[in-house]
Image (cartoon, rainbow, N blue to C red; front, top):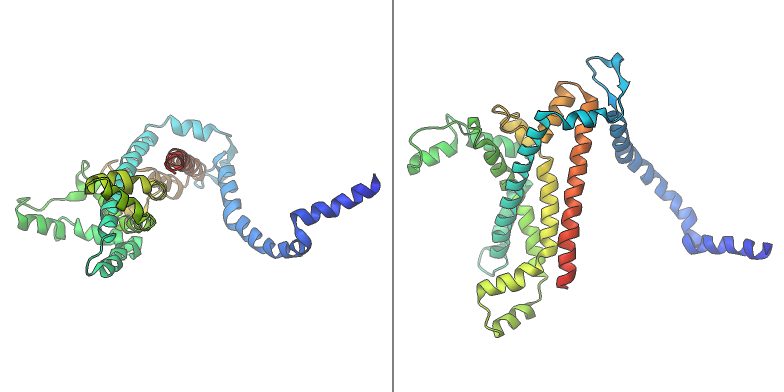
Length: 309
């Protein structure tokens, strides 16, 4: 019995690590340490902070409140206002980005002169830094010398200059337009890559069966793009639901609460009110919502993609 036990330990060691993997795994320790320092520790510490009433205005009055921050936040009207604004913004961004990206991907999937140049120019908005993108659209929407007012005035659409970002009914959509302009190119490239993977035999078979262009699009192209759509929806949802820079540059949450989204709410509570406990609580709520939506997309679209295969 002792001999069998003594022989089983090296066997298990060789099975899991191999003869050379034990010493080699030591080289992964620095990477693991860095990952824990820059990722794991801040996540755990922020959750630890969310359990405290921590306000740097009164640093000596810090106390453990457990989950009272989460309960109190869910009872605040401003929280639900931010949730509503975030939901509207995310739906507009994701829907607009996906539809425009699909149209651009279909265009670039065709063979025509200048296609490569158009594909290169398409990446310019995506490569533009976020701050530059926000400042550019701020100048476009500017009420006194903005190009949007000038263009619409020349076309006769409006009879005078308008203050676009001061209109609460348009603010969230104008910010979403600026976000779509930047995010759409990457989504189009992702869908284009999925289109290139569709076998040509499927289109030939559809033509033989008498399918027209619209029928080939609905019965061949769209079902084959489910994995690409899943990637685009997950990425765009995660980006949109956490968007901050455009709100900071264009409106700072205004006018009123027209653009008071969750990311701005977190910024105000954390860095303006210095309420780090509440800010960490809001951040965790936003992170949980993001992961839940991503999981929902993966479950629903992933199952449909498997059934299609």
